[in-house]
Length: 197
Figure (cartoon, rainbow, N blue to C red):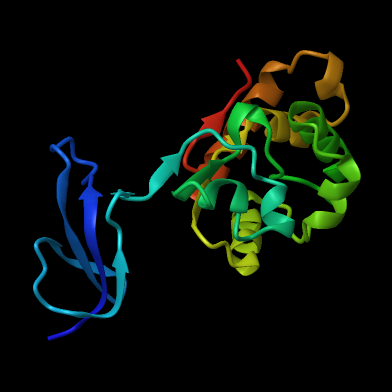
């Protein structure tokens, strides 16, 4: 039986803490079928002698929230082996977001990541308001890797307080609204809540 792909002669690191082995990996479809010495041929074969073969990396601290709009392949991380990226770090996210709040959130990301606000505003579809809508929009972009995200304190605070969020403290009622909005965002798919400190 031939496998779809066999990667041969690599230094295989399994990601589980075991010692690396010199060996092969057989892949059928999107499933690793065998690891070790694979005798069956592959429809495609790659000689990995002198190379390390690892599971995909998970990047838990990215600011690719804007880049995904113009680069759904996310080349700045995929070319280094990242297969899962977490967006929404440091309290800065693009959802929840009303249409009139886009400039503020894009400006905040510009400050954090030095990405021009114009690139952010024109590079994303901005076809959402809720966090769930944001995740749906990302899915439509067709990212090359797994993408997940946190909902940011800055976005939820601005959504509830408007421009008062820049200089003023939230009232107890607003804190409750921010917490409720964060909870709603988690129910819609955010993995958690991020802050900048």
